[in-house]
Image (tube, rainbow, N blue to C red; front, side):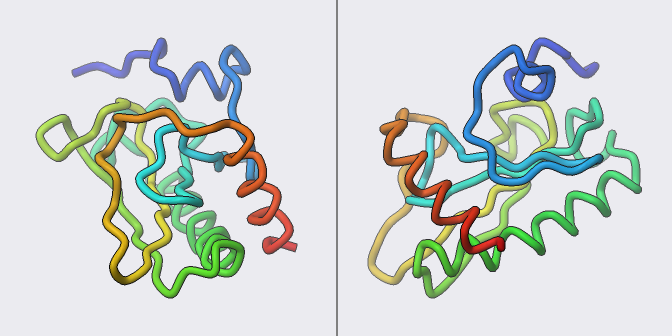
Length: 139
């Protein structure tokens, strides 16, 4: 499948759709997932038009890894989570629902199940409050 620049993440990068920003640099952008599987669930995307890992420029792959490495400890601290799940899905068969490569950072706690992927919109005020805690933990 060829990259479709009308996907929601491409629109977010162009400023055509809103997002709750966490981190932004020359090569990556991180923001809250509006359909989170757990409180504090966020996403890191490259500023490169790649559908999946197989299409991604190596420098952008490295930049994504650096941003995930920077953001994950802040999410863990802000959400007081004992664990963090890092997930990156490639293709519909793997569960990818937005076809712009992205990495999930999902806080985890014992005894708390994950919600189903991409099913239920979150309360925006809750997401904004979580984002403020994560941004504070980044500094």
